[in-house]
Length: 207
Image (cartoon, rainbow, N blue to C red; front, side, top):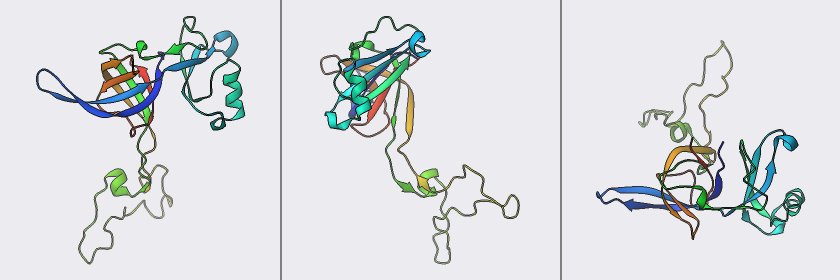
């Protein structure tokens, strides 16, 4: 895994090309992120970099989290993420990582929580067809039969039924970087990313 960065979704807009094309883009505020811990094969069994983002009041963190950051002289950070690397010698604790880690035209993978839509039925959740809407029908939006009777006499796990819709981790692969604003720490990527404005995102260079 390559070193990535974390940030928040600002929102969506569009970019116009000279050819007249209107391309939908997403604006993401990246970091600045701080290196909070360096893990090595000798101390932890593997090489990795832990970075933090989003300074918050002390009361927002547990004593264990505060102790971990206070030990290396860093402020309270809300988000901590780890990236496995082959070589960690180029990093040091307290190092600031910004949009300089990315290049125009680079492809990135972006992960985040999708928008939560609460408890939903099968028509909305899985695009099931509805039943007849006439007066005599008793199954307008009901899922119908969920399995055989005597054999096996149970419902198989994973059956598509009503339940929680959204609010799950989603990763969009190979989004192209169309713009970088180093002063405001903004990244402009082609297409959409998971979640609504303000959503926490993990941006990793695509291999």
